[in-house]
Length: 130
Image (tube, rainbow, N blue to C red; front, side, top):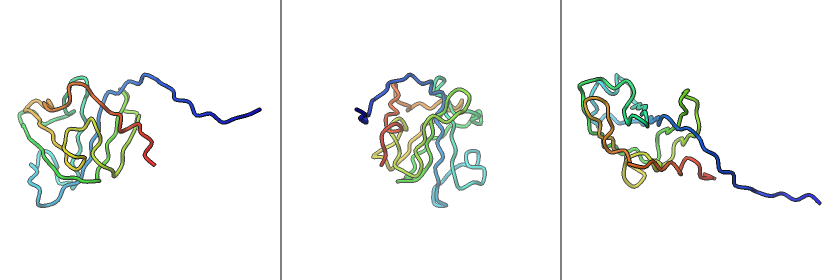
């Protein structure tokens, strides 16, 4: 007899980076050293170091931006391979913000993101999103 069974598999994965790409409006006051003329903000966060990769040294910034159900959020392995992605949906767990509609990043002058959670929870990236 053959039957179909759904099994849950637990595996350990090495998540090294969180990539965030979110749009912004002309009304949002975004410093040029962050957006460089694009209508999209892009942040690549090294999760072990808790720092934005290639952050312009000497510039600090507190970002509080309403993005609603927009943006692309990626979890990447140490070789920048994509592990999981959330595209054009609410701000997922593990990304600082409020109510799934806002993103909030407090970045110091050396690129450290001070409001990342102490313990990462990226469960939203692995939920069945049907």
